[in-house]
Amino acid sequence: MQRRHFKQTVSLDHRLSDEAQRLRKEAQGTPPGYQRDMLIRKARQAETAAHMTQWLSSQGLQSPK
Image 1 (spheres, rainbow, N blue to C red):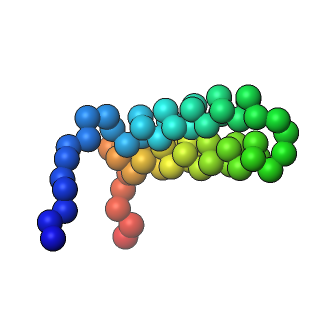
Image 2: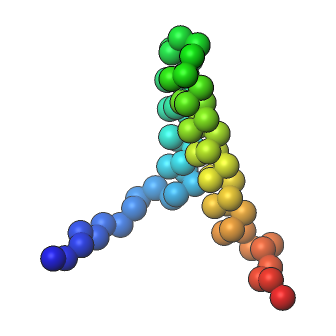
């Protein structure tokens, strides 16, 4: 069985940022409660992952010694 490969056209941090925006917008239309809290939590996780991706790919990052 072979895996399907395809090239991403949009960078990971951009996709994560877009996902966070989409989740926040969806949370605005959701009544307060568990569902809304989970959407906001997922949005925060996506934003954090985007920041980590940017940090890891930055040129100022130095390897541990």
